[in-house]
Length: 193
Image 1 (cartoon, one colour):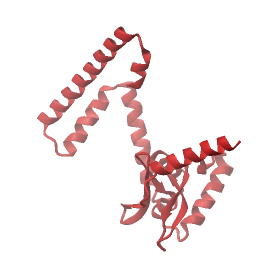
Image 2 (spheres, one colour):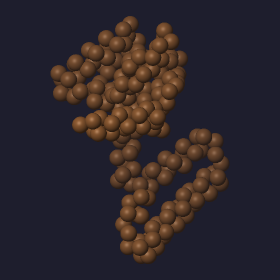
Image 3 (cartoon, one colour):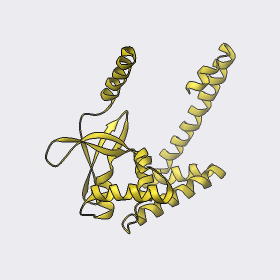
Image 4 (cartoon, helix red, strand yellow):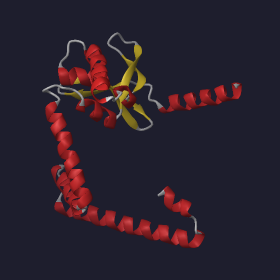
C-alpha cells in the first residue's frame, strides 16, 4: 500500500513541476483574466471569464448557479471541464480556483445565458461551421490559411513560398516514413509522427 502512495506522490510532484508557479494576467475587454500555464497549455480562471461576460456583481455565485442549472437541464457537470489551480487573488494570496483550458472555457461559455456572451457563441458556431466545410473540402482550409497570413501583413510571395515549403516538408516526411517502414517494418516509427 505504501508503494502506491509513493508512486502517486511522485506523479503529483511531476505534475507540480509542469505547472507554472506564476499567475499570469490576460486582458479581455479591458478586464483582467487570471491564467496559468500547465504543460504548455493555458488554463483560465472560470470566475474571471464569467465576470467579464456577465458583469455579475458576484461571479463566484453566478458560477455556482450556472453549474446547478446546467446539471438540472442537461445533466452536464460543468466542473468536469475544470481543474483547480492556485491563482493569486486580489489580496496577494493564492487560492485554489476553478480553471479550464481553451476548449473547456468555450464549452462553459456556451452555457452562459448572457447578451454579452452571445457574440462569442455566434463566433464559435461560425468557426465550427467553417471547420465542417473544410473537412468536406480541404482546399478551403488552405484558402483560410492564405487569408490569415495576408491579414497578418505577409506578402503574397512569402505566402506562396510558405505553402510550397509546407508541401515539400510533408512530402519528405511521408517519404521518410515510407523508407523507415521498409527498412525496419516498424509501425511505431509512423505512430510517433
